[in-house]
Length: 169
Image 1 (tube, helix red, strand yellow):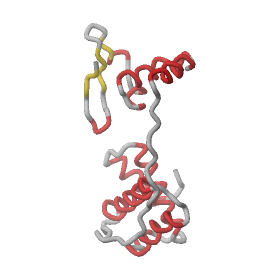
Image 2 (image 1 turned 120 degrees about the vertical axis):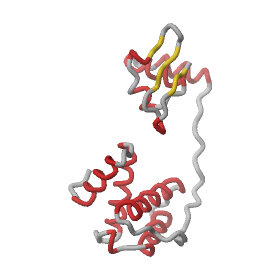
Image 3 (image 1 turned 180 degrees about the vertical axis):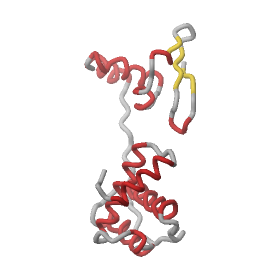
Image 4 (image 1 turned 90 degrees about the vertical axis):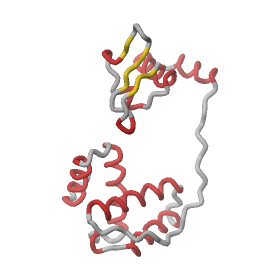
């Protein structure tokens, strides 16, 4: 994280509001990019026009995808509404990205078998759990031996995405 007291304060407030670590890092990245784009001016001195120029610049000069542009917009909406208490206008006029979303690559069962067969032993069990049960990365990383119920053949997932607790067969 940057040494900026402003960005440090935002990170602290986001932790207090219980935002995920990766969300904090991502929002800080886009807030910092916005500040640098505007010549290091403080965001409280900027407004809708500068946000529109920044988002249009992302499409015109940086050629970012639509999801990246939306992520930057979400970070700035958060900054202005939750941190600065100066909500942005609801009708921002910026150029939307037209780059289509990339389709995810899905492996066939044979390709998945080959991948698991070639995987180092240290990563094999977590990879098999993620593939076989559909767990997310952080759910696998946080899994403990107490969360495995061998009698019923289930896993207990704590602090899953969205704060949901679940049991997976």
